[in-house]
Image (tube, rainbow, N blue to C red; front, side):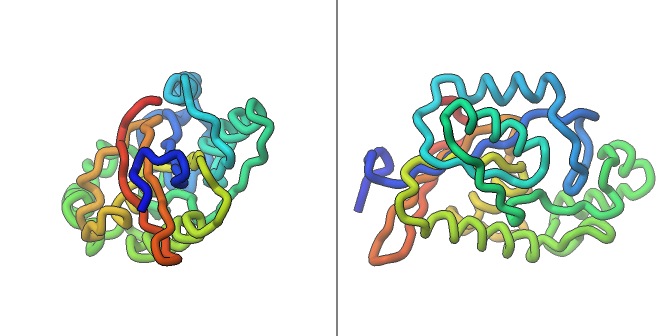
Length: 206
């Protein structure tokens, strides 16, 4: 089996988008672009990056616009995967935590403690979110010939993928902190015909 540093292993770098326009708020399906700060955060995060061979992105602008900039620099195309979009927060979309706390404090607190059993009102259930992200992730790790992949996605998507790799209980995913422009590296080896993903680093810079 390849070691995590083996150049023959498939390496997958998960990059969370930077700060979107409008600042910190619940933003799942809202398609806000990156702010100027967000662009700076992401460009800083990939300084000295290795030569990616494939680039994958969520369909939302805060991911695709940066992914396309990187792809253009490398002469690559961007593969947009709808399954990597962020979780929908339903009636909380576009609202800040402070705003929600003022009217739905108990519901929000329960969501933070146990998102599996206390989803956002009219939002996407965590099990559905996990299932679609895990399906996209599994498909990505099974593709032969991908040697070093950049995946530009969202904090929730990265939490789900880390949870899959580390076999974490679904209700504990909110304990993972994923800052803006955070980089998470995972290797995916093929063992007996099946991918074996392993976490190499989280919140690192190249």
